Image (cartoon, rainbow, N blue to C red):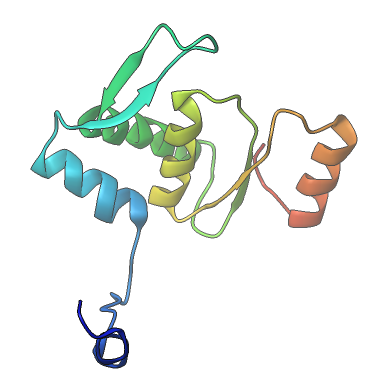
Length: 127
């Protein structure tokens, strides 16, 4: 880019009518490069590294989506998710996206009162 104004004025973002990050990005990478590193999870001290490929993440998020669907979760349902920093956090959020459900992540620092408020105010169907 040599001329910012010209580039800015001619830039057009091609936005698809329907986009699902879990399917259009994660699953697409899993199909194109299944062994490519998607997530590197390390323990609290920086050890115990766990390497997850796009194929691993895709399969795990499919399992999460299937489990949630079996529990009656569907498109538009709100799902409260409170997990520590572990790979399952990504798997559940991506599973929600695959279903069209709305993931509502919460930090593990939330109190009982915080959790009750979020679930009640949002109309979450699953926690």
